[in-house]
Each structure stands twice: as structure tokens, then as C-alpha cells.
Image 1: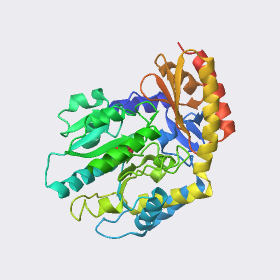
Image 2: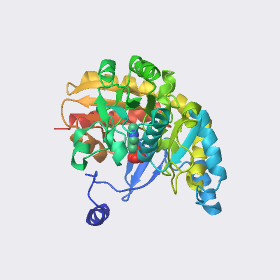
Image 3: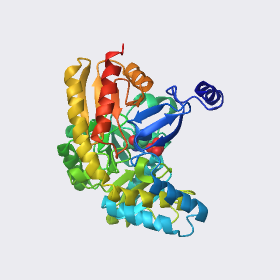
Image 4: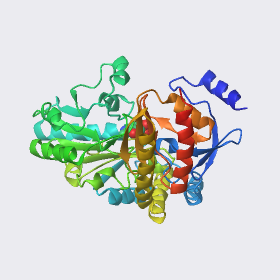
Length: 397
Ligand SMILES: *Cc1c(COP(=O)(O)O)cnc(C)c1O
């Protein structure tokens, strides 16, 4: 049965993913079920999207109720869910103004436009530079791709947008070496996801903040993967108190309905985009807005950040044990419910073994297993995961 759907998908869908050989049909809590009814424990949550787990009744009801009311109005009109979602995300983040998008990449695009416009209003020039980090990931559209620090993602699609330079994460001197009076922004994930679970150090973030304050460049923190409670803080930068000028968020923001956002301080909002500068047909539509409002409600009700912190600490200890016990594991990094194990060899075999035994894991690069469970995960779920993981490691080639 499953093979039939896989074959059909491969016949018609452009092959831009080497997909795992499974067709997921539905989910409940931290579990996923394939079309044959097999159960899986999910430690990926659709890459950090299903923070609330699958089939949360209140979330589903909120989305369904909005479907019966109105799905879409143009951004030329106001709608209630967007106004409420805006208040929720602004308050939860500590930023001042928000623009809603449909995806993470679009949020990054907007953030870059904000930075360029802000600099343009200051000096009237159109040759500003942006500093990004090696191994970063910001999305697949041209602007976002241009600041993504993986050569092989960018190269076939050149030329990228101009004046982008790459520094090394956690190496402040490498940033200082690139900063000029043309630099309008430094963009950085607070905790790199796709690039291999590399957290920015507190010292580095504080250094970036100071550099930006000195030069007038804007600090853009990409919180699309590490935000929304995943590290135990609503946004990862809250842990360090290093406030960005512009911030991006997405993935868990809509709880499964596509939604992203870029946010900024009042100072940036008052001196960058104005009416006519930026827009979107769908961004912040009533359906996404209603989903987002319910997400923030449930985060409070379910104490999501606290759970990510406690269960995250437990996961950290259990993964440390795993690291100690297997020579092929060379590093363990991360925070809260965003962690990675680095192997000295490709992890595809381990991930496929786990999948066969009902555990969903994902890689970050060829050698790193990434752990991104729904944020409602329990210590018992972690124990279940560890048992399958051990076996998967032992049976891997
Ligand atoms: C996933 C991701 C993006 C891109 O988001 P899309 O919704 O896939 O466009 C950007 N930045 C980070 C840090 C991400 O993890």
C-alpha cells in the first residue's frame, strides 16, 4: 500500500528531496502513524513545526472554527485573528512590530529588506553589505539563500544578491575583519539548526551586539528553528538577553499552518519599511492568525517552555551517556529540545534503522543526528527514544 503512494509521488512530484521510505497518514501527541497503521515515536516534529504535538484538540478546533468563519481577506483590510496574533507574538518576543509571512524564507527576505531600507534612509546609498555566518541556513529563496553559509546550496544558482560576506560563527574577529561602513546588518541564527546544531556563545552574541551598536548595523537573529520555546526560552536570545534589532520566526509559529514573521524594534520600525514597501497576499491571513493565537494560548496552558527546559535537560543527560558509550559519536551539542549528536561517519544507516523500529529522527548534514521532538515530549518518551536509538546505532554499518 505504502509503496504505491511512494511510486505515485515520485512519478509526479519534482524530486528535490531524497525522502525516507514512509508515508505518514496521521498523528497523535508524540506519535505518528503511516498508511499501514504502524506507529512511530516522533523526534522531528516536522522539523520543529509540531511543537504542540499532533492532533491537539483545542488547536484543531480553533483552526476548524476559523475555516467556517473566513479563511482569507486581503491585507488591504483588517482582520481580528491577525490583530490578536500580532499582539501575542510581539508580547512573547519582546519586539515591537511584526510583519506576517507564509514561511521562514519569506521572513528572512523581509528582515533583509528592512536592514537595507534602514541603511538607505540613513545615507542614501544602495551598496550596503550584509555579514552572514558559515554553516548558517536561512531558506531557499534568493535573498535567504544568499545569506546561507553552505556553498553547495548557493553555487548552482548564482549570482546571489550582492555584497554578502561570510564570517565564522563564534569567532568575533572574523566578523570584525569583514565589517565596514557599508555593513547594514549581521544575520545569525541564535542556535544553528540545519548547519549542524551549533549554538552561538553568549560572548559571541554580546560581541555582535556591541559591534552593531558601534557601527549602526542591525543585528538580525534568525529564530525560525531555535525559537518558539524549543530551547526552553520562548526565543533563544532571551536566554542571553542580547536583543536583536530584527528577528525572524516561523516553523512552530503557526503550529502546522504555514506561517512566519519578522519582527523589529520600534526604532527600526519607525525608520525602515513604509506603506508600499513590502506586502504579501496570504501573510497573516485569518486562518494562519487564528492558528497562531491558539498556539500562544496553548504554550501558556501547557507550560511549553518549562517542559522544553526540564525534558531538554533530561534528554541532554541521556544523550551524554550515549555519547560516552559509542566511539563513533564525537560530539553532542544543543539546548532544550534542540540537540545533535555528531558521528565520525554518515548517520543515514542509524536513521533508517530507527525508522524501521518506529522512531523518527532526522539528520543535519551527513554526520549529525538532530533531535527536535514535539515540545510536549516527556521523560518517558525520551527513554523510549534512547532504547531504540541504541539499537539503531549498534546495528548500523
Ligand atoms: C527552516 C528554516 C528557515 C526557512 O524556513 P522555510 O519555512 O523552510 O522557508 C530559515 N531559517 C532557519 C533557521 C530555519 O531553520
